[in-house]
Length: 467
Image 1 (cartoon, rainbow, N blue to C red):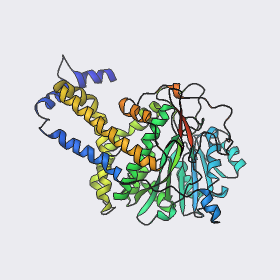
Image 2 (image 1 turned 45 degrees about the horizontal axis):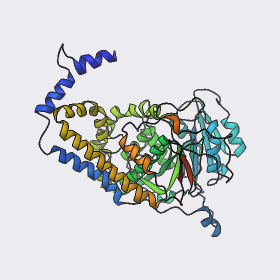
Image 3 (image 1 turned 135 degrees about the vertical axis):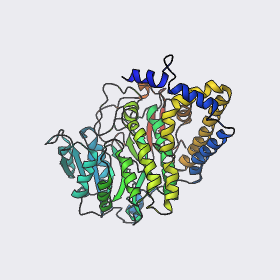
Image 4 (image 1 turned 90 degrees about the horizontal axis):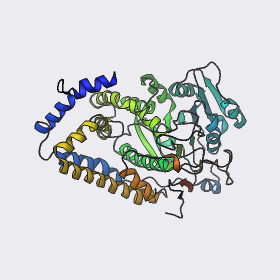
């Protein structure tokens, strides 16, 4: 059926002229005008370089800072909600990190699945740590969070994190930033591997991607509103979040984007806290992660499954929701101007959706019509992006002591497949997962030092000494 559609609609020849032929004819005779490339390049430069004019926030104080001053860095009016699915392999590490920040009574683990009773031993693990466990018999992350909002009725705010998200010791619950206008706070994130203290080359590339996304979201939050917080972690006003669920369509894919969309449509701004990078688990390879790898929770084992089989389902339908927001929602007042600018461009938004849909046709046709000009323009575009990410790495990440190695940076932009990675960068953890000698859960090195693994066998270290 798919092959018939591709031939009859897109190709057609020699029976008739298909859609690709007419696109070729239109680009050759009607759709091009002199100087059009300059407009597109100018817009690209503004979107790419404008966020570089701001910096991440200063690092949050260390636990010793509060200890010396006899201050308890707790949030008595905030509950921690952890929706999870078959999370026994990863939840223990998450709870150990969370208990450094929250009392056990403030932590709610909402396990879910299409079963009247729990489907793994997550409840027993929660009991051993003294945290609250709730079973939701409907397999949905959104419903699990909804249930958690009612279970945490004694709290004014709720912090949502994934089951594989480790809160660093210096994590701050910035509930004071929530106001009648600012209804959600997102946090900047970075890539970690919950099953090993070494991260693969593929995960290092995702680490760069997540950190760049964090700066762009921070910039959007300052001039308007971030389009949506990272699904891995976000802080909400609990009563407002309950109202947001009434507007949420309930889709299980891109549920975090729809939370952000509903928040903005209801007049709530979303801002970012960039004082700390919160570690979240990421796939270790593009296509194949190895038979011995296991993963609990909502995550996927490979980038292909995560993005092409889950995230990309949203691209086409996202056009409708974004256009309806741009023309039909004005409840943020003057903040709408900056917000809509980023809705037009940001990842999974209108501009990039159009690029994803038409690039497989436009790019080959462009090379056929004007190969030299197209090659020069493509090379210049890659060079501009490389310059921007080099500035980001050497200025913004250097100040945060989170620089990414140049080898990763160059590979990420030279190889367009994201960018292709083989499992040879992955190294199995030695021994069972537990606590490291320093007292931190292995694989969640959330202090100022954590170690990765280059695909050529060289260790990749994020430490203050190698900055």
